[in-house]
Image 1: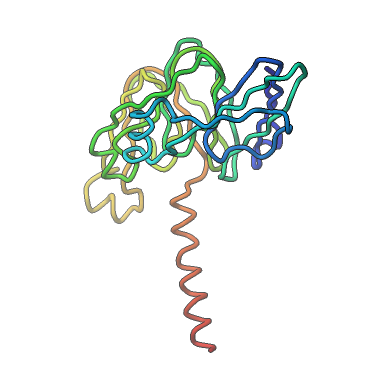
Image 2: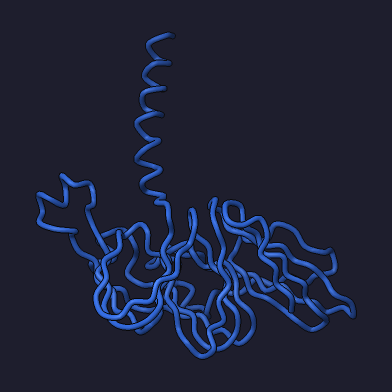
Length: 230
């Protein structure tokens, strides 16, 4: 299987060339286009109960789509994410990794999907009670809003809760205030992810919640101006 990530870093898309007998699993809605002979099958993501947990307690999709090549010639599938930003390919090689809601895009055979308990503090911060967990061997593709930075953590590290994309299973995560209650509110930082352990994490350079907070006042102002001129 040949996978080529094009249009990086702002509008990244995955061009997958499936040889006969090969397949790739992708998040529901990730497909841009595919050859007409590609076979698509919809499944529960990680199994029935895991899919339900992902959907209702983790903020993820209930289903995934499996694209397979049952012909005798190479076929192409193009995948992407709904956000504007970069896409990264990693090879698990027996490692495990957890994703924030919406980051996962696709994986190759040999990778197993599951969930990991994130804690009530994660739910309180709006990030769900469970995180999507992938393990096994194979390639995983995930994306983010903006650029993606890989960082190796050894010990303690603090990340704004809207900028953490993924973290390896060797990392323990807790969600808390950035400082005291007053400073957390007045500084605009609010909740942060407090990470500890050893492993790799992936950060996104932009924040969707920050974009929403920037746009919302503009929309409200435009709506009020429109009403005044009517």
